[in-house]
Image (cartoon, rainbow, N blue to C red):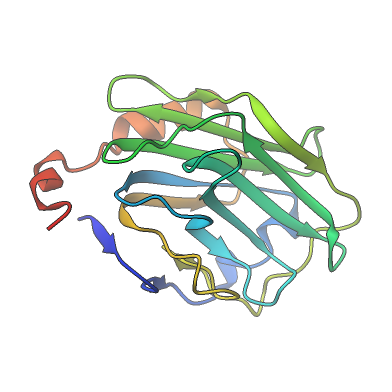
Length: 197
């Protein structure tokens, strides 16, 4: 099933213990298939950052152009310590299914990695336009809820389009593991005719 998002909409998955403090524990992966229908700044795919600045979010930004994937992990309770990476170009074009995934591993440097693929190509790591290695300990997100299609701390960062097969894992997946997830979870292509109605 595909989730269709419009202005201000989201799915709230709550704050189960298995979703809490993944960055604090040291590593996690997040991603899914997206079908963007409208340009817009800061379109969130999946987030857990309700108590600003804390937690993390994966989204598509307008860093030079719309549709640029970025993973952000807050550190040290301050925006100046933020850990993030943003791709160097548009990887999620309009009206196209795109697989977007990101990993965070506090034991490695750099810690954030972003991967993008399509229906016809397995995901690979992107080249980066912007990055910050941050400093300090990743902030707790235990009181924040996991949102799909928006973020709890700023619900104006809504995703415009469809999200399918979203996932969050408590390990930093390897490229091969992310490619397996991509192969095993293709979007339901039959829903393409519904997009844009």
